[in-house]
Amino acid sequence: MHAIIKELASGIGVAAAALGCVIVAGPPAAADGKWCNNSVCIETYDSGDYLGRVEVSVVNTNGPHRISARVWTTNGWSARTKAEDVAKFRTYRDQAYPQRHFPGGTRLCAEGFRDGESVGLACVTITN
Image 1: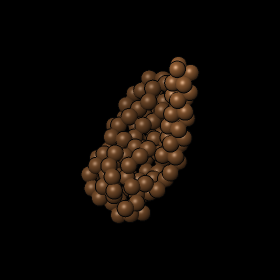
Image 2: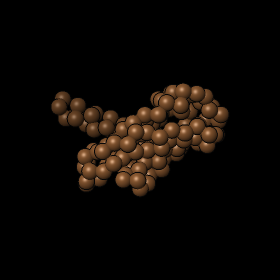
Image 3: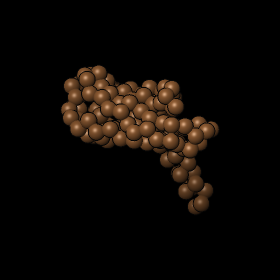
Image 4: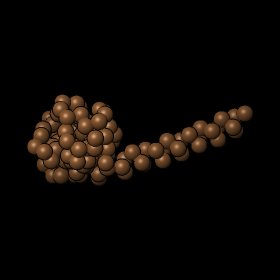
């Protein structure tokens, strides 16, 4: 019985990992999902073409750094996140709040900065 449960758990883990790869790699989105590029991820929590909250995460490296991010869309909305001193091997997270609908085809992007230098640019296209 233990072997069957172990095999079932392993299969579920493989399926979850495969699904995670699809979510990360699938750039067109209906405003709900997570997309990453290098050390930066952008995550949305809404459905359709409405974006209420966007979370940006920036992975820090082997030393303390001042981390910040900029979030924007191709139709003119933009916001800067707070700058924060982050210890080594920690992930910085902050949110931006567009709280509006965006036309289909709008690109949502987030760029992360470590001590003022860009460490990644994650983008996704909003679809209806």
